[in-house]
Image (cartoon, rainbow, N blue to C red; front, side, top):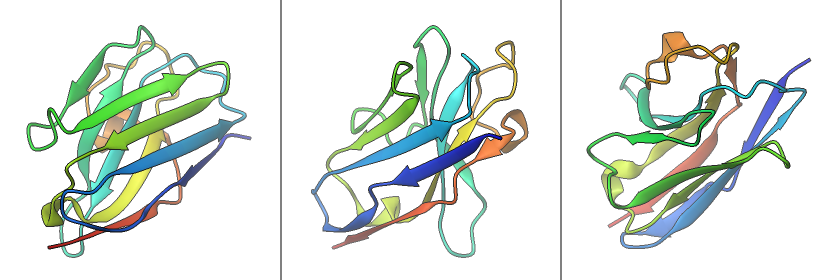
Length: 124
């Protein structure tokens, strides 16, 4: 059984940093993984993806501030977030694709496994 456990959220002031982690137990796929976020009243949006070859993709709004990485030996996905802005606030979810050949693009339909979410709140 696959379980994704995302942690590391919290409350910070604008300009601050957070590091999110996602431990993927039972997840043996060397496949695309991603971080999504969802603000109240808004749709879930893709923040960043990282493919099995470690290639990455970022939403324009976070380029240059966020870094996605993965440690396959530890089955852990990370999201380093710097220079946080109030508009970065929301529930952050890690996600994993169920097949290595899934196109690594940040849309929810491409991901089968999801974490429970970790809250990020950035105050101005």
